Image (cartoon, rainbow, N blue to C red; front, side, top):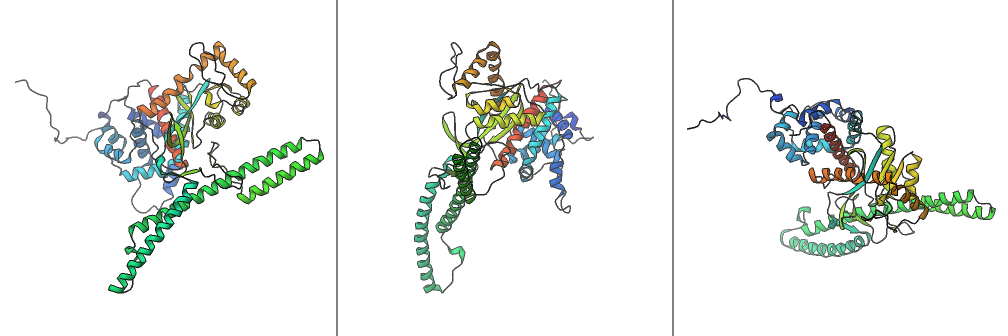
Length: 483
């Protein structure tokens, strides 16, 4: 009988095993450990060190970062799955130093330090730049819709909020009457007094829903008032600018009077608000002239910052995630709740300059970004824009005659794109930015944010883009094989 090789799974080791023997030398886990050791994590450590030094010692933040990075690189986003992998997966055990952080610890670390991933993304991007992966000759820009951690069926319009409140109040009155009758009957039978626990569950549930609707309604009204106030202030600035260039004193006085009334109405609706969107566009609530939300203005009960958008012809509850790509390395990233792509171009170009200290020579974008403001914004920053003005015909490559309104601007852009150099350059857009979304959404399965709220979603997208660049940096190393 042919003998088998020895197999003793329960045999104890005579000498302690070395983790370096568990994984091949070119494994991505070793690369992640090297990168994590180079990162400046002072922002994370500052938050940790502010806590009371007494009690259980915290886990090493670099270890948790390494575990998170490896998990996201392999499409693992659930903290419970990551905890289980720290027991069952050799690479996770190497990265964690053979410790097994609890899933709540992993989730809390990601949640508490989510804002730090923007800075960590820039650090990894700069490592890519030092490795020669970012040339900034030309950059491709595009956006994709990522689902929010919320159902579109949990959204409610402003008009529906009023209707639902009226319906729930009627039901609460009926249930309250029944509860009072039941209490009176019990008082007659067993004596007076009833505890809160004796309230009908239906009544408690409806009162909580009424409270939640009232909160969302108030938030929607405040945002609508702010949006209308900003609109009035923009109108006042336009009137004042027009007055400064007008020759007729009577007309100048009239323009300044109208501007003053607009500013007064704006101050009455809402005070000036500091921009908290970090330069990215924000979806404005559709408002009436008096600053009230329009009846169809909506809010989601689960994630009130998310919006209903269209993706591949379907309505989804989500966010608009943007990337600027240089040779499949993400040189700028951002997220907003504004569905159209157009308003994202100038902020994204600005972020490229902030991240790498200089702007690209050219930027490529599809027709969703074409407008005069974007063309002017790119030129002001020394960037040559190549933006499609309409759908191309496959037969002859000519642009269609649909959109935009400014015929001269469109003609100039068409002329730039129709040259042999322009066609060759623009053709590269789909081979650079589209594969990035494919790798993130299909290969690594990131299609839904696990966090809620605009700020946390931005941090999570920064982490996803960081991991993408980390894998590109690993692929450019001498031994790119990945286990």
